[in-house]
Length: 126
Figure: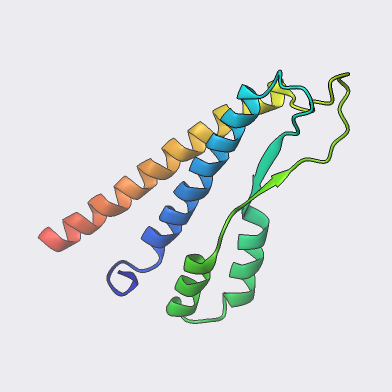
């Protein structure tokens, strides 16, 4: 698929997977906002992915495609101390803002992917 479409489709796929996981984790945090002892989780992807792309930027398109394909996101637990007596460290305001931001990012990425596919469809049809 990379030979035909380049790395744009693969990059969009990884981004959408990351954002989907981020939404699930955020919703899980919100659902456990009243669970005693629950520690909020978060998803990491962007910093590691950026570093990997920067190290491979001098490579070929296939090298970049391999970096994109092998990139993964990770779910981590927060170690923040809780201000609450029950030990729960979920900040509902932060989680709700994060959910809204992730939803907008997901919609934007879907629109960008649809535009890319439409552009390719136009090129193929002529």
